[in-house]
Length: 121
Image 1 (cartoon, rainbow, N blue to C red):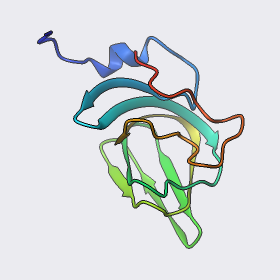
Image 2 (cartoon, rainbow, N blue to C red; image 1 turned 30 degrees about the vertical axis):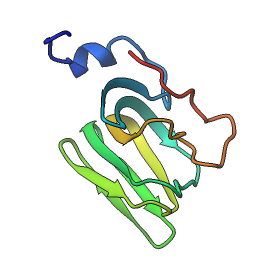
Image 3 (tube, helix red, strand yellow; image 1 turned 180 degrees about the horizontal axis):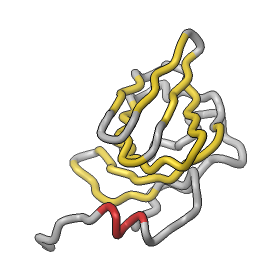
C-alpha cells in the first residue's frame, strides 16, 4: 500500500493527447479520470449512470438539448443518467471525470472518439 498523494499536475504532464481519459484512482466502483479536451465532442448519453465533471483548468461548456452549463476552474457539474449532452471547450480544458468503472466516454454512440477504458496513468 502506498501512502503517497496523487499529484494531478504531474499526471497531466505525462500525456498531451485530448479526449483520452486516464484513470488516476479508484474508490469502490468509481473511477477518477483526468482528461485534456478542446473543441467539440459528440452528442451522447449514459443510460446507466450519472457522470461528474470537475474542471481544474480552462472553461468547459456542456450543451444539452434544452440549454447549457459553463464551468470554470474549481466548478463541477453532475450530468444525470440518461441525459443527452455534448461537452465543448474553445481552449484546452483539464478536468476530472468521476464515473463508474467500465463507462465509455461516448456512451453507446461509439465512433472514432471512443477512448479505451481503464487507461491508468
